[in-house]
Length: 137
Image (cartoon, rainbow, N blue to C red; front, side, top):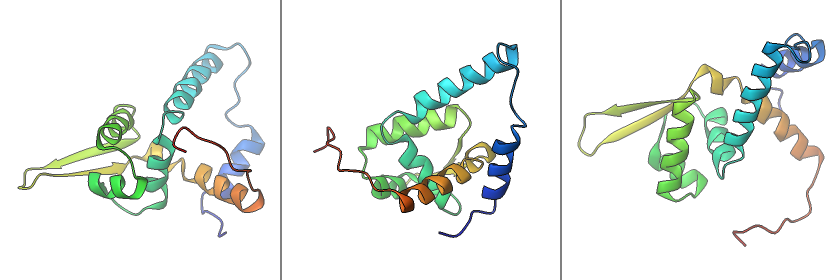
């Protein structure tokens, strides 16, 4: 796998621990709340797969593009896109056209998640998971 341009900076930041806060500080508590909110959002069905589409894509995506790529029910996709827009990871642009056209773009916050997806890609190249039974099976 080719290294992400941001991967080296990402790894250096983690190793240098630049963003570490003193345990128990107000900033550490705020960071923990933000991390908990992020993990709750990412834990919702299809959220990571949707974000991955933006992290690996180039430019805006239309609802139908995401729906096709992710194989997700329209109401669930609509809910996830709304949540991702509300927290500032995506922007939504509606065009006054017939038929209606809506495009979603990744914000800088979402783009900064790209190294996470890069690392997960590296991890999957190194490891294999046993088949996991899911509710979809």
